[in-house]
Length: 301
Length: 301
Image 1: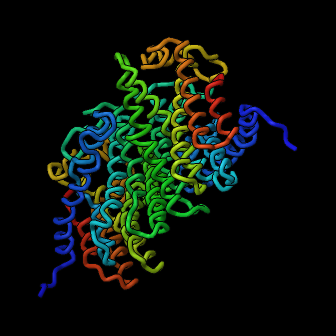
Image 2: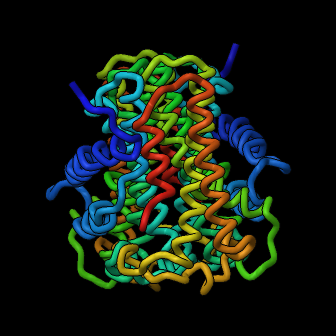
Image 3: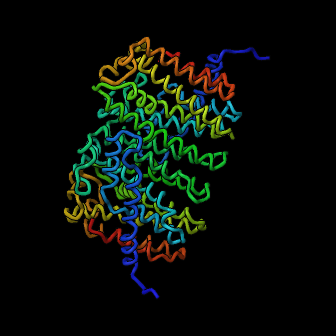
């Protein structure tokens, strides 16, 4: 007989099992001897295998698990989402973008391999995400095609790239709460939402359930990015593996800048409540997803 | 009664009809008011709608036409290939790559929009290619999934990006004919081959026919890139819309550098003959494809 656990404990146990499984899977993607220039492979693996929370792939696995689908079936798709996330970090760190020297406690990709190789490593990881997601999977092909569309839409001009563009344009300017909402939902929340939705496409769920999962993913991702802003001001640099205050240096439009720290935290909690409420309203009983969303707000890095 | 025409005439007539159709289709993809930052949309359209030969999408349409599939059915997939080509030009022109100021007679994307926007416009075009290719199409989903795999494989670390990496690494170094073959097949021929293969996935063709089309696309694309090298030395700058001699400036590893101009031309012809021979050996009677391959060699720009 199993003891009842809090959602946060359930999430922690799941992360402890499956974040390493994601790491292990990613390490198999571009093995030594893969037929590509060695330096490209090194640059891709340098960033891909640098650790990280593996939050997006774990959310994808957890969503499928909520509907009874085993993690090993979902892993190739979960990895595709992490490939997109990883590419976005490499390009984001480039001198023409945020010009960051450190990422996860190590020199950024272009600091080690140079700008041209970093650019190409990012391009290659993004492209491989779709090769990865389009591989034969034990799922009906129409649902798999929906996964490809979901990932591309969330990552591109109507999603993450659109958010990054707006983020850049908002530097050194006054912005409205609406500008900030666009930036946060697009640069961060859409890909997190896609992780949840792609997990859901492995199961045959009703439209209303998928809509609820979309709301869950959007608000959980939104809360996550708001906490990212918060941690950049109030977090512990050693925990985060990068310098604090980069938002202020770049004069980014952030929640603390517009609302102050206390209200920032309150808004993150409000989006967390929206996320959890979306599941409850649709009758989705998943302590695991609830706990993962809670951990996205109550985190140190 | 129709008069017999040479393959080159057939290809020219087809290009005259369908290159403008590709242009018109591409112009509908990111219309005014599309929900993304205006500057991102402008930067994407600036490069996407700058003309160009539209060779890759036309090859895709022509391959499907060879097996009786109508152009309007294939157009969304053909456009996806041009999106990938267009992104690759934007990233290739960046200062950290080839640092080019002119493309198709106009300032390059980063010269107009700045490096950050050009980087993001390229990322967005690449990502949208997969959204485009994964849209509902009147083709069995398993064959459509093969198209996604084909495009991603040809564009990424095992294809175009791998070739670009090797191309950069070969600058200012001695290289062997084998190095050069890797560069040309990967940075150029694989995407042209993918255009042919994606066209073929619209039809239910035998494996042996698809293999022949793969050989056709590879050698036609190889011949095309060899002629690109030739034109960079011996072409007419005004025709090409960019300065000659950029390969020499960047000390690229090229056919003229390794073999001289006359032998370069001879090798292009040899690959053209291989391409045409692959069709003949498989009994594929397509003056259109033969003529398109011939035009890829006998061109002024």
